Length: 125
Image (tube, rainbow, N blue to C red; front, top):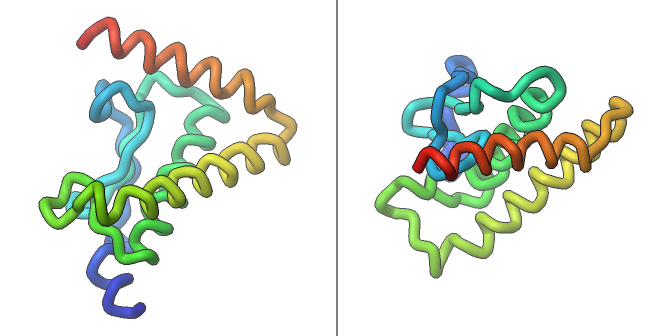
């Protein structure tokens, strides 16, 4: 377990959150262990930024704990790692939703704003 954490986790002391014009695909957030960063679409504001940052942090941590390489890593194999990666994504969604709801924010409104950004990004591609 310790080896997996060291191998697939970022350097927590140097982890950066970067706000970018465009994220891979049409996403509003992503993470890259090799670059030691979480990337967030710069068009997100306020609580939407918080929710997506929490999501990406949880997803990155969960995949590292399960020993799954970053999906951009050539060692990543969809047939081998895909199901566990989906579990990490689902857990990150649940935590993101719960944190927003605990703060009194609407999950549906958050999703609507995030989808609007993703839809706008698809038009540019």
